[in-house]
Length: 286
Ligand SMILES: Nc1ncnc2c1ncn2[C@@H]1O[C@H](COP(=O)(O)OP(=O)(O)OP(=O)(O)O)[C@@H](O)[C@H]1O
Ligand SMILES: O=P(O)(O)OC[C@H]1O[C@H](OP(=O)(O)OP(=O)(O)O)[C@H](O)[C@@H]1O
Ligand SMILES: [Mg+2]
Image 1 (tube, protein in one colour):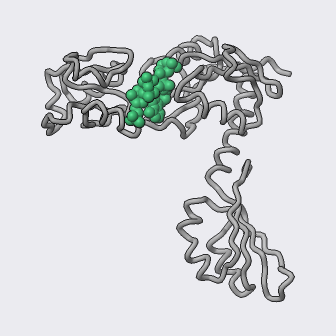
Image 2 (image 1 turned 45 degrees about the vertical axis):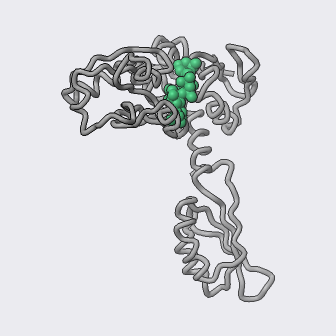
Image 3 (image 1 turned 180 degrees about the vertical axis):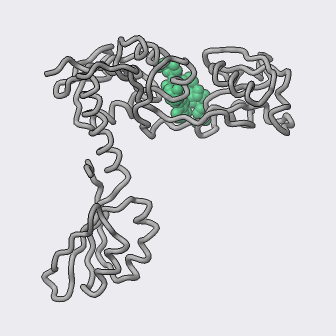
């Protein structure tokens, strides 16, 4: 096997389980969650390091790891020189400014001269500078939402997903400054053999992601309805049509984006389709 590509994953947190599941779906096996800080894949030339997420961009920039999975918020905040090679679509969240619920708020200028607590001083500083607002940034490493109630700051800037943490701390979201999801980052100058391994990995990730967004459809229809159904279910090239044992009827097999399927389902039924099955796809390669 080639010398392994080193991949840094979050040891334990919001990114860990989805990161592991992604590699599992790509058919890459390794031990995870056993308290180990390092693991070698048994069937792909990869070695995994389990780290705090904040440290991952630095390790990737320094070349200690070749790849890493982090929130885009962390990748940008650390300011490390790394390349984004893929957007992964999980751990979606936003970085927002929030203030106590009872406070009036008109626009960003209301924050002029105020104190804002955050773990994201770089992202917040850039945003305030762009908006021409001058506020004092107080960097704290966690439990940011508590800051207004203990008199540390008049506002906070932190990660929001469902909004329930803000709600339970008596805060309201007033500005969204950054939208984030998990991304795969790489060292900016990978040697050729590592680049080959990255290309193989991205090929598998694309196949897994394409499969997730699409469904395999099987239905029965009278032969005269096939042309109009085929227009609604174009498939990867064209639908497969095979005769049923019942004279004048066929079975239609196709692949369709799940959103398009739900948008077209009434039209598909109205065209004469019956016995419609929707089947998940494991991998999809165009
Ligand atoms: N509530 C949430 N919903 C969705 N994604 C989130 C949420 N909170 C954080 N994230 C995303 O997941 C990333 C990791 O969050 P997590 O809370 O596990 O980090 P952490 O506590 O700093 O972990 P570590 O111990 O590794 O430093 C964040 O940087 C962000 O991109
Ligand atoms: O809008 P919500 O759905 O409530 O999510 C937002 C919260 O989630 C994250 O914290 P997490 O629960 O991961 O705890 P931590 O900050 O202690 O890691 C983040 O730091 C917010 O506090
Ligand atoms: Mg962290």
